[in-house]
Length: 463
Image 1 (cartoon, rainbow, N blue to C red):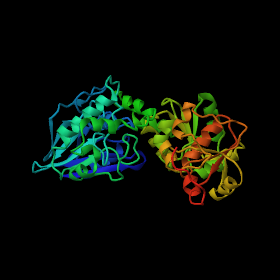
Image 2 (cartoon, rainbow, N blue to C red; image 1 turned 180 degrees about the vertical axis):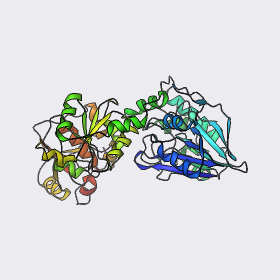
Image 3 (cartoon, rainbow, N blue to C red; image 1 turned 60 degrees about the vertical axis):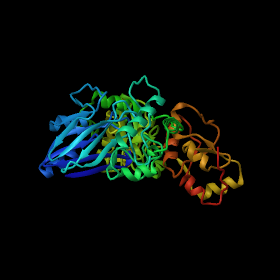
Image 4 (tube, rainbow, N blue to C red; image 1 turned 90 degrees about the vertical axis):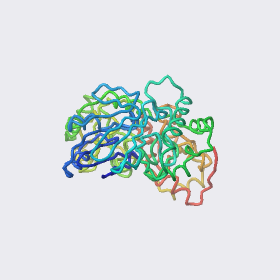
């Protein structure tokens, strides 16, 4: 028996490769199928099942493409329905694979179809559970992401409590917990940085498995302080339910290399969004007017999903040389399948063609601190509300990047604003969006609050 966790950091997502006697199951696969197929081929094994713990909201799963390419059966738990062929298991159903068994434990609460898969090893012993978003390390899944559910968040939270008590907690302490996500995912509130653990240890440290926790207290704890889900979550869940275009075709369409003039012509003809995926410093030094910065080296896909509202928006992009395929792949992971090309030769080619460029004013944190002490400044802090409350500058206004499209704050064009986040990534995204809307008096503070707070500047704690 072989179990391998395939963890993707930018999505904080864990997929699983399970093999026994040359038969393979893939659990919660990402959009690209090649990694799973290569592992199976190298082992001389056949992918027999693709188990989905639920309709994922934060990424587009690779189950449809993988089934088409391998002939494997897609398995969902009870209450699921799809627009493509799949097997809808019943609670307690057993799937044989080589010398092991995988048992369906229906664990609704995160969503109605949420299912945990219990693996029994060659000796028939309960070995591990693949919990999806039912149970994380240190947390449980949020109960507000069900597709078209008439049930309230509180009712779903109560269902999750019942699922944990009846299906998860009775299992032995040495059973290993393999969740679908870790710290950084928006599918829970306080996930651990660890990506697996024993169930026994989770019973000791995870509030949701505290034996003294009442149902009402669990519901209160789980439903308090949940931030609104990113706008793309419901859209991705529906894609996972209905199906999607073949990834190979999406990659081919997006891999079109465009010269500077052709790039400009395509933008004008299609009204494509120009996405700059380089580093914040490179974007600040020179970028195409009206382009939006979201750097590939940050939490790229979640920010794309949070900020680009239309999944059908045509996208052209600028990338560091050799990373074009990576950009298209990571866009497709969150359902942005309409990439139609990239700038061949990058910004050097754009400048060589004599095309217009824009820049972003940036200032080192030390210089900002000096100005801050000398005179009143208009400061925009684009971190999350919780980060702001934990410590911020006295005159700063909290304008979280997460809500930039909701119009909660509109800068005054005649004022100069100093913009910072925690380290400089989110502030550059914010500035790029504001620049595209015609605002030019925005200064990025390099290093963000992390650098500022080390310079002896007074910090206020609390809202």
